[in-house]
Length: 317
Image 1 (cartoon, one colour):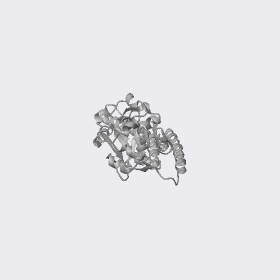
Image 2 (cartoon, one colour; image 1 turned 60 degrees about the vertical axis):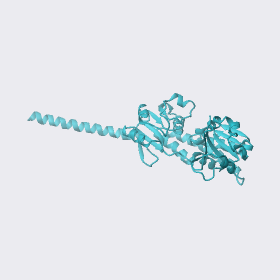
Image 3 (cartoon, one colour; image 1 turned 180 degrees about the vertical axis):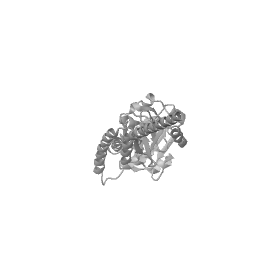
Image 4 (spheres, one colour; image 1 turned 135 degrees about the vertical axis):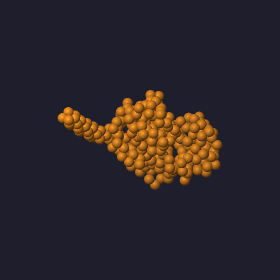
């Protein structure tokens, strides 16, 4: 009987000790975790950012700008900056056509992307597998761009660097404000954004897009009018819009053979933009990503539309 009591006492002491150690472990984990707010205003606790998978281009750009590029173990097909990033990192496919297996094969501790990634069940599969997923809204303003930058900076333990990047952005914003002030009272030019992939995919983009937001930021009238999202481009609509300048991604302009090829598309040569060969082309991620370089991109867009005659190109390098 004495032996049984002794063994029970030892077992009780051992269980208390294990419980105590587990409590300490939980405290350490909680203390080590970083809490940020996602697109749904939910708190996400991040315990490790040692292996990150980025699900969109602007997130990849932000991570490298923050100095944690070495922690990024995979990215999606929209990641085009820094240069050659897609050649250096495994691809997880396009952000609107993801699969959980490919992402999980990279053993991520943290996955970051925008809140409209597809299919949505992939996100649930990742979370069920124990991976922390942080989804954020895609910005449509400088204010939101700064907030996303600060959120990701906090998530990966680089708050100081994130604040430095926002200060650089604020400097560019001040430069743009001076330019906009100098144009007060002057008529706005009309710009039409053309999304092209060769001559087979020709779309115009409306106000509720990243490009529409950029037009508003730089004081340009969107010649697409009340179009929402994207619509197929027709010669009649382009001629009726009478844009002063065409704006494209550089890859889109290249896909139709440059300015000469662009103006061969039906109706495009018959507008003020076409007659004066007023074409502005900027790198896609640079212009539409609202990443760390978005202030510079807005300045380049303003220069291309208001300060340069003819053809203007900016890559953001």
